[in-house]
Length: 292
Image (cartoon, rainbow, N blue to C red; front, side, top):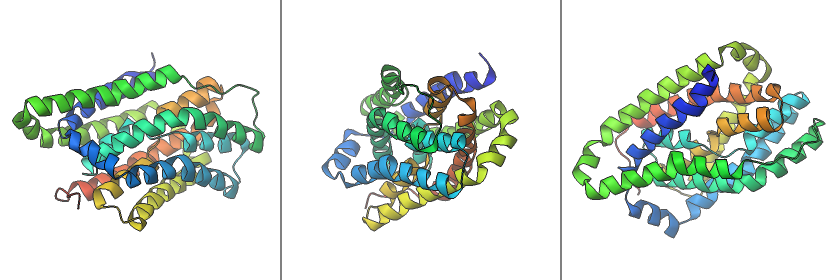
């Protein structure tokens, strides 16, 4: 197992699972029933992620006149749902964690159907057809969602119910741990992709930065347009701009068998961590935000 595989397959999932456990200790069932009773935030978040994001990615690929391989790589990224990292960032930004987790889970399941359609269309349009059948690892994807998010969060919520005082005391330490793990993961990603970083930024640095800022901006603006509170707006902003890079790399390298298509994904990951770091600094220093 090389460094990249060690980071993506072991260190990152284990770290995120631990953080999800801590998040669970900040949640109660009412946090989820609240968003189910008022589903506007869920519908808006899913619309941004599953519809607007691929459209923006497609438009940017044309506007920047990307090569077919780079364009398809960008579309792979734009078609992927958010990942557990978005839940971590939401926690530090003091957004609605329950909404973030719900959006990640639902979008991940729906994307099993949407990704093959989007990528087949992209391959045909940009002329990079590889004549392969795009089939996602459904079982592995579901196991990943359950193992990294649902199960640890459920355990955390159980601890919150049984040991409330302990769970409340752990709130601040877990948020601090989230920041530390975020920084370590960022350094690990940089180290694992150092050899590709310069070429990736030259080939797709600007377009991936524009994609990241645009999707986050639209996420925030649409949330405010529909008069969602700040906690929900933060969650939708992050879910709109933080994609499941691991899944995107699997699609590019294992399913489409094209390492070059992973270049925009690597470039986007760098910008994603940088812009998320800015959001974490800005919102994380604010006092806890109410749901009002």
